[in-house]
Length: 270
Image 1 (cartoon, rainbow, N blue to C red):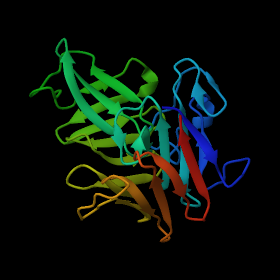
Image 2 (cartoon, one colour; image 1 turned 180 degrees about the vertical axis):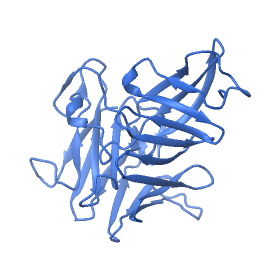
Image 3 (cartoon, helix red, strand yellow; image 1 turned 180 degrees about the horizontal axis):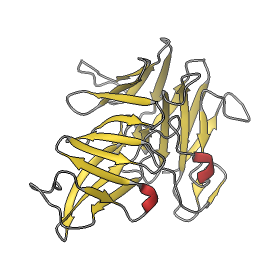
Image 4 (cartoon, rainbow, N blue to C red; image 1 turned 90 degrees about the horizontal axis):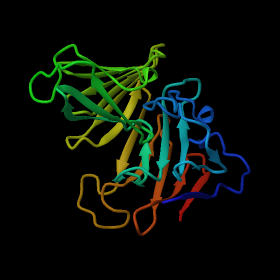
């Protein structure tokens, strides 16, 4: 499903409250703690044209930053749309929060354990041990390192309490034993701690000095069959008390975002 940004307050450029980048131009999607806190930089060729379709695959992609805390590179709220994304998350089909990465244990190949990390922009990466290091079940032995086909992807290190994905630029992402993302550390003093409910749903995140973003979902704590579907993200509460609201069409697809400063983003699908 292709996405088109229908209107943005009749502005010619994206406002600071909601900035976008194109996967067709990797340099415009720099992997920083604001726009892509849990996604490595895309090393692929620049195959995009306009807003924003990969001509090689037909994939439609965009990234919007709804909020960033002033004077910090850490605390932010970003969304990614990937038309080739699987499933339907809290923002509707194809959408994913920039902090909503996860790790899944895959079946071993040739006795070598494997994991797949689904990044915050929806792109998957597979990591495998370089030798047979299976411990109990599919889990590798304590202390094992798993690598991808590209050295630039860094490595995933396993211990008895979980997994740490270390990047070449010093950033590290910690996943618990169940594959939930627990924290992101940029290696330069900025850290985000993430919280989840008992079902694994992301509830929000906070930085090292206590600033936080809290997420509110449709039907949270009550039975609700109204539109949008139960479980959709409807509100983000910012550190200063400001709120961002998310609206959906009858099919449950994200159709509008009301920024905390009153600006709006509207989306259509085709």
